[in-house]
Image 1: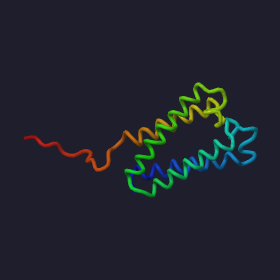
Image 2: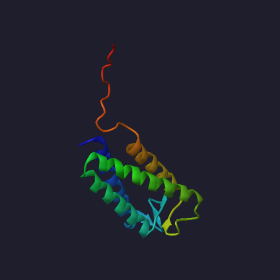
Image 3: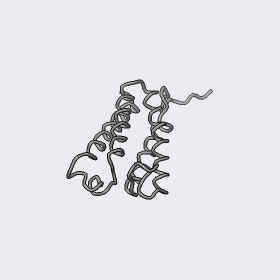
Image 4: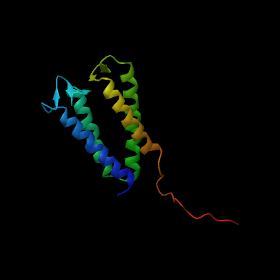
Length: 132
């Protein structure tokens, strides 16, 4: 399994687990996941859906995995930026606080790095140099 596909699967499962935990009493109470992150039902469903799409992409080829990192990196970056200027809700529907915004920034940076940075598919690293 290529590195991007492995990380796509890891991202997916983490997002699904976070989303599911948003519905577990005791772990989430009064709209706070682990007492830190502001969540509501829609916020948790978005994490589950995003995670499921990442898991699906992990089963495809490496280019699909990289494309999902690019797309979701941009989406999470936009949500993070909106969260910086929001007052409790992003787009008026996703309950959000500064801890969520910081986490969305971390997710966006990691996803954008995996999508746009890192090793390119098919590149050879540490190839011996040739002198003519």
